Length: 304
Ligand code: FAD
Image 1 (cartoon, rainbow, N blue to C red):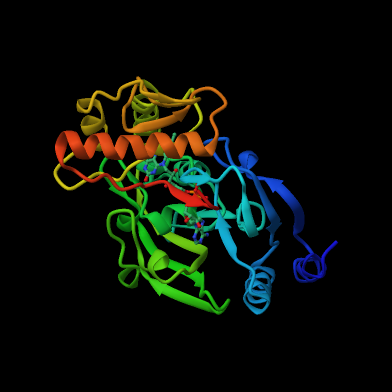
Image 2: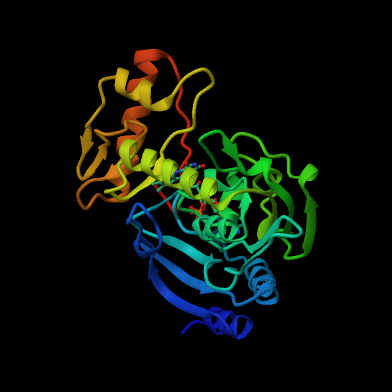
């Protein structure tokens, strides 16, 4: 084992450190080669120590939520993937304070179900987004008219130097798929979500209705990274892709979903390279058909 591995083990004693961990196990696209190191810090102190160690040793790191907006290269990532899913998955809903407090690795579906149990409304929009709270804050995730920025009370982060910082809602600068967290490379540790009292029946039926809409419209039966491209001003990416004649267009095992052209799916054992090639073809064909430049919403990790 390398000296760096031993140092990593020493600073993340309650977490786990894996070597050459296949990232396809940790992304909803189900593709991605090995990360040199994969660590799940058990708490904030360990997270800060891992960050500081990486900086000292000049080793790159990447913060992983649920990997639902992520395409990892087939050759993997030469650095440390820091998973937030294990050590930061707490969630408490307080009906009196009308506040849900959760760790950044907590799944949005879990937060929505805790909010429902506490009869708190306002988070239904996020119940079907398959990401963690941290990933959703960074991206200002949104769906069906709701956005994270409408419900944030505060966010606790570590800076890229591993120092703690508290941000109020007004300091988050959340916009379309962006925030101060992304701009400054902060790491979300915990967040407070401000909701309102509501009826359990209404919350439940709203969540069921949104889940139904997703099942009908989205290719949930295949691995994907959700909407592959950002919504260009004044357009819908899926419509532009369809108009460019790309419904069902395939590169190897990667395909433009026949059900929803805004989704690139892993139809049949696709590689990350095939998915990337498909995305490049889409961008080129849409640009020549409509003049619109599509921008990737899905993040990439590793060399392409
Ligand atoms: P990851 O994919 O793990 O990471 C995404 C980015 O966030 C990376 O840059 C990562 O470094 C960063 N990150 C993750 N956690 C942290 C943290 N704690 N601190 C700092 N940075 C962090 N998105 C929507 O907005 N609306 C939708 O309706 C929607 N529907 C989807 C449907 C499907 C079927 C799928 C597969 C995806 C969908 N998505 C949607 C995309 C995705 O679920 C969201 O972008 C989600 O917020 C990503 O969260 P994650 O935890 O999976 O992040």
